[in-house]
Amino acid sequence: MSWSITELARMSGVTARALRHYDEIGVLRPARVGDNGYRWYEREQLLRLQEILLMRQLDMDLPTIARILDGDHDRLAALWDHRERLLAQRDRLDRLVRTVARTIADLEGEEVMPDNELFDGFRFSPATLDELEAKSPESSKPYFDELRANTAQWTERDFAAANEQAADGERRLLALGPDVKTILVGHWPLIRQPTHALRFPEFAQWCGTTRTADWHIRFRASVVVYGHLHIPRTTYYDGVRFEEVSIGYPREWSRRSKPPMPRKVLPA
Image (cartoon, rainbow, N blue to C red):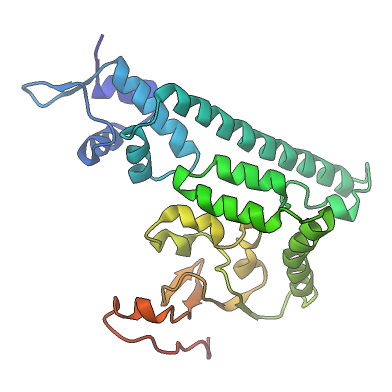
């Protein structure tokens, strides 16, 4: 049985425009194209589209998805892998749901939530590593191996200290009061968007934490300064200026049209 592009769009919820784009970039070719230019899809393409949508749910970009689907991966093994990733994601969301429910109960006076449980579901732990690796491409495995080796001897207290760093910064910023403007300076970008410029997008997970994603708004930042990405530039997010000030390594300078120079931060 064959389905037209319109029928497939209706079945899957993917627009016909997106399906045409998938064809153009080679991630989902139709089974055949009629003399009139109409695209037709069969069960094999439906199964491939299902895999594409599963991987999109895991925040994979289309080039990465295409490499996985066109590689030597066994389809059944890939589906089992997707299942494990989804289960890991579900476990994390379940913890977040429990945390939100307990926070609501705390605010409504039904129970007092212990301070050390306020961030349950956000903490860095061995389970966090498992969840991140489950969501990551195979090319990231060496980095997880290195991170596990570096934290192999960590105790629960060591993991708690790592989590405390972000929590301590947040407490100090909250103590400033609602009228104080800030300049936020850190090694990593506060938000994910600057990592979209990376040549290898899977490295984004090593570029900070989502716990700081709204700090530039919550703490009234005039400018945010960071340096981890080695991509010096000025960008704006939510009306706030972000300055990447790293000059990078000398081996990187030859790739740029201009030598690295100090960047102006103030006046903001």
